Length: 259
Image (tube, rainbow, N blue to C red; front, side, top):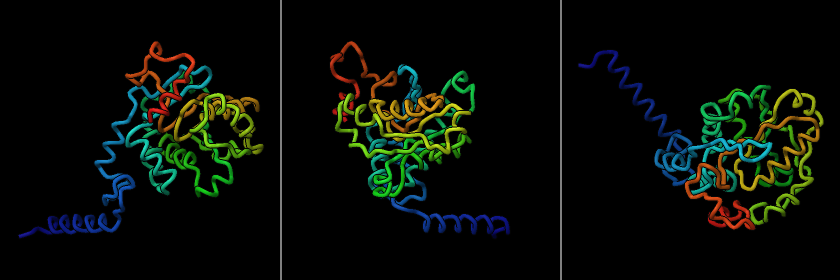
């Protein structure tokens, strides 16, 4: 005979099962039904792309914190977020990046001043086309976990630029030379902090450098950039060996061609 408590437990479990069934949606990567953002199988595959060494300080004046390598299921997840209208993926990816910041992010000397998070902006025409800025969505979940202040409109994109993935390193820099400006209403408050930029992918660093230079020209300190994934080889990559590379070819170009 069931006791009252056991009956209540059984009813509660049944209620949660029925609720989970109604709340389940297709996994954006494999289409299996799941109540979570990603199904357990796809979540495991994305986590296999996680970087062992997330923080890179080899770029002068710009620390880079990246959650994972731009490959496999992580690359698929970012593509689904941006191009297949799956903004819920920003919750999963932004939270993972935020946990990396908390666990293995910048050292204390990099955080001597208050930190402000500024997502890399989209040009208004691109924003209208996509319907959202993936960097801003990622930053919202990142800041929700880390409790860092988010300045979504700290930077403005004032020039529509050619897609970066098809350009050489020099062309990327030229493409972005005048792409950004600081929001005049945000200058004063941003000067009181060290800005960390946030974006979905770090490739050659041209976008991050252009954004950082724009902020610095306005007297705003920049600590680095946080990204979900990184396409450029760095200390985390077992296959990266500077002695094996042709000095005339940009490392990022090799990685992008490979992917």
